[in-house]
Image (cartoon, rainbow, N blue to C red; front, side, top):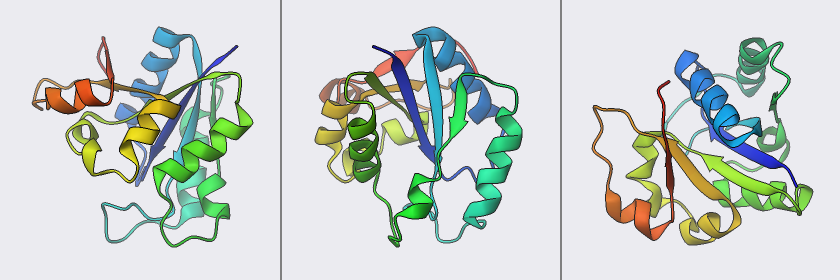
Length: 153
């Protein structure tokens, strides 16, 4: 049984903070990381072309054996890809593995607004790193059984 971290996001653009979060989570959980760029983020109005996001991520993670990028959301032909659909897809692929969902600390506070948030929290363990400048809503952490990872990024 492997540990797999799903790391969805707009990655517009990907930056060192994203990379460090993924790297630290990978080491902490002894897990592989799959970056899953969104075609268009639910929370943003416009976005760089999907192919550019894939290329930026590929360049960022080049040489990292435990990191990969998925084009899944670019192949669904949906205007909006909700995380629940993406997680269901990966749960089918990794049936016998432990799935983790890495989210930014800003999304911890918004998680109750995600489509099918409770189902997401049952299919994958939600993990995050807290930044000192963001106050976390502990109600969401408890309700969705989230785990704060220690360390910095």
